[in-house]
Image (cartoon, one colour):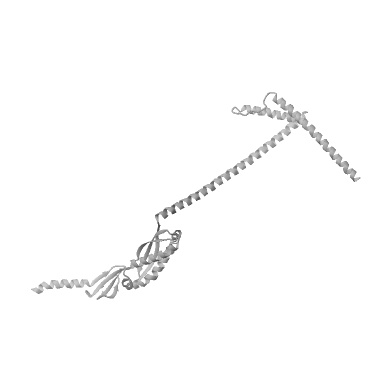
Length: 320
């Protein structure tokens, strides 16, 4: 009767012991198997058997690429406190799983310590601007130091990145003000250059306008002179001498000008003199001026001829 009671218990214990000897390992994992506390073997992904009670799974290790973010605060060469975020991507070397499991208690803490050590050795050699420009140099230095150290513990450092550089808040405000002032300076320089170009272009346009205006006036006066010459020739043909003809033409232009002014209803121009006898006086004055001018010119011409004749006589006497 007692045997019937123990049989189910024995069967259950047997099944429990049997199933405790079966275990699985997931993909990209590895299980460390120990026998009586001593390393026995490494089991990769799949279904495995072990001796119940005698063999124990000491632990499982992740074979995937892992990332550790480390935030380091340090000071630059120009005494600016800055925070750097260093991202370290690492992986267990499949051939060194034993070392990765047994030699290192906490790989994250070990990596963090090396990152702090390298960053606080490299950044104080640089000014703040160089930290931004040479962040790749910092990442290379961290990666090199970690690789040399972590290889012995069974870990491979795949990539090290400086993912963030965060200076002190007041320093960032100061940098923004400097950038803003620099941009305003550049904008002012461009505006000044544009204004200079506008002034030069305007001056060139005005100079060209004056040149063309002067050329037009010269052409106008040339045509007027040609017309006056033709008018004088016509008057000479009817027995009026050049002085009288010139005076007559000027008087005619005077009255033409008065007529043109009278046709302008909104003109404020006043031509002086403009009395009825002004034309006669102007004509008489001009004729008298031309006559006196001719007389003076004739006297000067005779005097010059006398001087030339006297010099010629003196030269002849000297030759004799």
